[in-house]
Every structure is written in structure tokens, then in C-alpha cells.
Length: 109
Length: 152
Image (cartoon, rainbow over all chains, first blue to last red; front, top):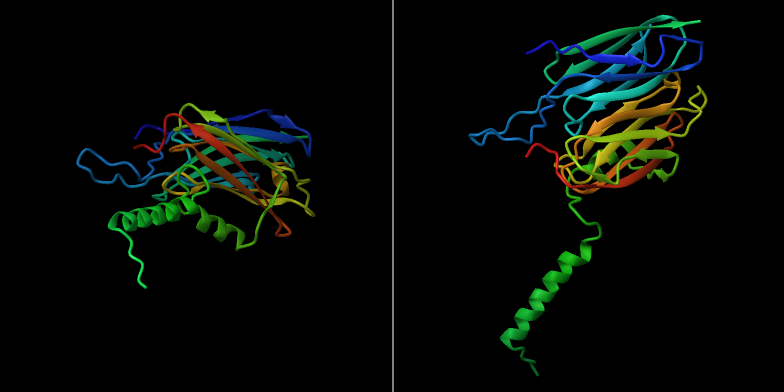
């Protein structure tokens, strides 16, 4: 499988305490629904990223559970409230337990 | 006295009864025949959500059912006293109803998320927000889909 580094963009690199920071992220993943059949007629098993978590300085600020109805190459956009300077870590968890992780950082004045 | 019904009359009566039974129950267009009721019930615990406070932004017509942009947001101060804990999003026309569940806290700042979803056919998308005090709010939107997106 090719390198699946997520693309992450924060709308600001520094923020005042209490200010909202918007996060946009895109990750490559087929998000196989489990509804398709192969040429032989067998069901292609489901394989999706079923969980997304964002933490800032180790504390969860937003998370989501995904089902098969989430599009391939899942895009997500959300916000968090800037509290302290630290790493912004985005983690996606696959049905098979593997994870995709991307990190940014926010500086809070 | 036994009334006799001609065979033709009996068949017509039977057909009419059957037709009424099928049509009588149908209210919504398209299929509502997935597990949306169960998924909703698991989330709400059977409690009826109140319409309002939830804004579900979806196109009226989705040209490509494989990727339909959706933003869900909930009016809430998002303070420790009053905030959104979870928002469930389901559909009523895909083989499976579940779309996503978003988890928020005061650290989220706002209860808002934007993702892209797959819709197999014209159907309703329903969002239900749960607050920290257990109250539930909901909104739904119908999306017309011209090219379905469930990988079929």
C-alpha cells in the first residue's frame, strides 16, 4: 500500500487562548463498504476507517465514528478551542486495527 | 340465504384488498427499509428528539452519490454547563443506516463537523444531537441523488 500520510491544515498556526481553530484533514483510503461484489460474485468485505480522534496536548477535542456511508478518501473539517500550546494529533483507526496518524501543532498566546 | 359472488368479483375483491394493504402503509417515497429505526433507538434510548437547534447542511440535489458534502452543526454555548456530547447521523435509503457519530465537548468550541458521505439513492438524512443534560434535538433533510454511490 502506498504511503497514506494524511493532509492536515489548520486555519491558523498561533491563536489566542479561547479562540477557535479550524482543522481540515484528508486521508487516502478506499473505505470499502462491504456492499460490492467482485467479478466472481463474492462480496468484497468491508474495510473502512471507523474512528477518528483529534487530541491537542494529549486531550481529546473532537472525535467521530465512521460507518460505510462515509465517502472514500475521507475528508473531515471541525474546530477546537485553543487552550494551550502543543501538538495537534489526528488519528484514524481502520477496521483491521491499523492506524493512520498525522501531527500539526498550535501555539497559544 | 347465501349470497354468491362471481369468481371475477371475488378475484377483484382480493386484489383490491391486497393493493390497499400495500399502499395503505406507505407514507414516504423511496425505501425506508434499512435499520435506521434501530440505530436511532440505540442512540436515543427510545426518547423522542425535539425538532430544532440542529442544522443539517446538504445539497438538495447530489450529482454524485459517492461524495455528498454534509455539514452538521448544533446551536449550543458549548460550556461546561451546556454542551453537545454526540451527534448521530443516519440515512433511510442506503443498505445500512449508519453514517457517522460525532463526539464533542466544551473543548470543541462549537458542535460542528463537515464530512462527505455516500448516498445510494434519493433519501432522507437525519441528525440527532444529544446534550450533556440528556436532551435530544433533531433535523432531517431529503437529498435527491442522480447517480447512486454505494459501490454497486
